[in-house]
Length: 371
Image (cartoon, rainbow, N blue to C red):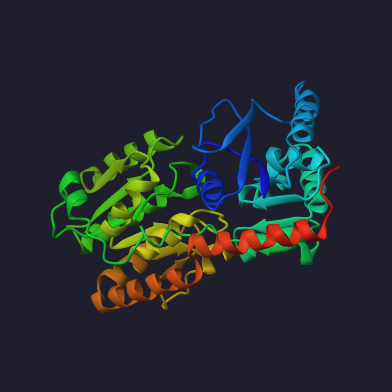
């Protein structure tokens, strides 16, 4: 197949997706948006545009340029990743078969957050125009249908886990030594972005109480650099627990397995979410999850079955959930084993991509190629 992606080349999600189809022998090219771009080995980068946003003087020029590129390229499929801007552009060029993948924010937040109705209209237009739609969770699939997508057009393709690298019982001794964390210290990890959405202030508040019962615990807040990082560091000092919090920068995807394996508990408590791959990767490596009570994450965690679920922005219940897990080592071990098997059997990246390849073949056979 000859697949042309319109997607963010800097995203690890894009890189993993297109690299799979490159590796199994398909002809892959990409058009990107944004001021930054990254080359992906073996992928032809056809063009990069700063933006594709209604109201911009570049809106129509970009649309016409991309249409000419696609006409020259003659792909079998055009696939837009992330409905907002990328998906709009893919839909408006008028090529078929058109595949659109929703990531989360583009469906759960941006359509209703737009100050102008045109943004929501373009999203709904894109969902209706696509020959095939995929979402990263069952919750996202339902929301796409609510916005006007045909139910029989929407499929769930999870952000999958590389189960050859993210495995149960990985040895994290080297990383523990590198970070200066003593062998007897309990590690609680949150590697969601340091922005308002992810509620890391609540995680710090909960940690204040956890330390009263487990003074040797340490909280790792990884993926720093978000807008709230200075405030979070200030909060850590103000509450007197700065010595028990380790702020770490963004890690490469290759570095993450050891970080997850280091953690006893993985905390992910955003105000909304779709189907985060970080949660599944942490579960595969044995970290027991404590998550927000949200539809997407609940597809992977059942309360008191393989983790804990707490209300959004409730530091007391987050505290109680963490302490309850740390008091019961048998439960932690049982949940860890269960989660590895769950991710291995239902969320392997290779299985999700094989399913996607089958969908590509089906949409090509059902639809004519071209404009």
